Image (cartoon, rainbow, N blue to C red; front, top):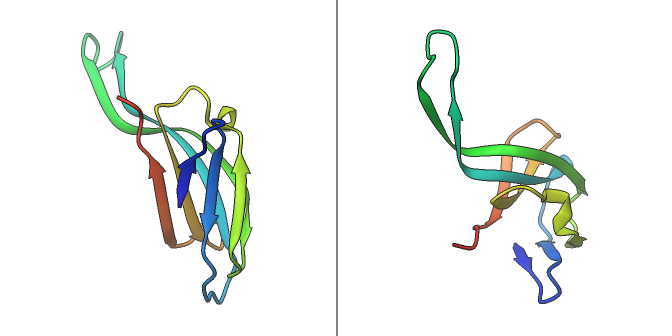
Length: 105
């Protein structure tokens, strides 16, 4: 679970569970939409739109099956529209959990 507390800090909570291997906890900052004006090349003069563009990715630690709470300063995902947390086996394996805070509209 990913929430924002009244002081503005982010709170990450992961329940206890069974795992055969440790999982990396990733904090992801992303833009919901990104527009790029292409000046040259085969797409020169075009405007390209991309969605859910990852802007930063930072490890918050390792989950080994125990319940865990992590307080995160929102500046760790500064300059982004949205924030997500991923729980990924082995650091680069299968995603076993995810949560996001949607941007305030």
